[in-house]
Image (cartoon, rainbow, N blue to C red; front, side, top):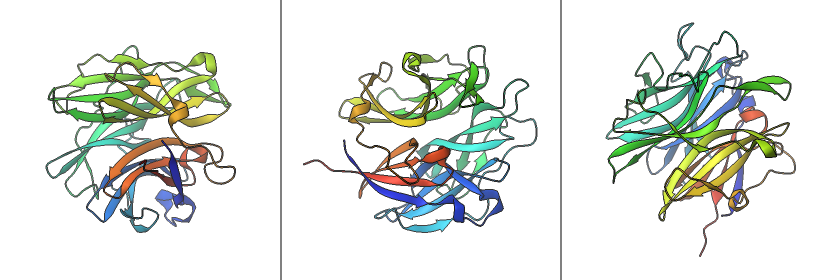
Length: 311
């Protein structure tokens, strides 16, 4: 693979909106029609509370911004709920005329800085507004993952007639980069229902490579092409933040890392010179795009790269 960077598309410093003072966190693009891609993001206010918004871009040239949400399209929950401290988009399933969004809710914890659990919302207007489906997380805590069950990537397997969810989970915290930080690994769940994930036990798919300084696997994006699964993920390392990674699998369970084949690297200067993270790879009629965040976990917005076609 080889990606051609198209640069920073949305710069969060120029929003002029109190609820979107910084970040365009975890870009999650939806094809609205042949002309428009709607990029769901978490905009942060000055208290670092994230609410769901969108940036519409031109499908044929996604460096062109067409529209930006003026108000939150999905707000945080009441105090004490699992998503009271923030909302982050992760992935979605389109069925008929509805978009079912899996999002991460940030909540309070009596011991740790926060919890990260997965919720669901639905839209009937291609992601222009969303309504929460449940007041509780669809991935609730349990003994082995009592604070982190997040970054859900869901896809539908037509052959098996079931849904697969890759997500990251964990319970251990430690001090890294001068702050209390969670550790988490990649897991897989399978369900016959899009809405019922609470009763399945997960299978560990990929552990963080502790020996090489990695302590977390973040935001999976899984694509199935030519008989194999392709995983785009974020690797979190001591004193280095996140960097993008790539792996392949024949069954979706056992992954072989092939980071050197990803074909994108940090810039020497600028918005993605220190960090690249939270990629979402989207195939369109105009080519395959990668939407991703840069320095400080998307503080300065999101950018796009385009896959270089091979002959």
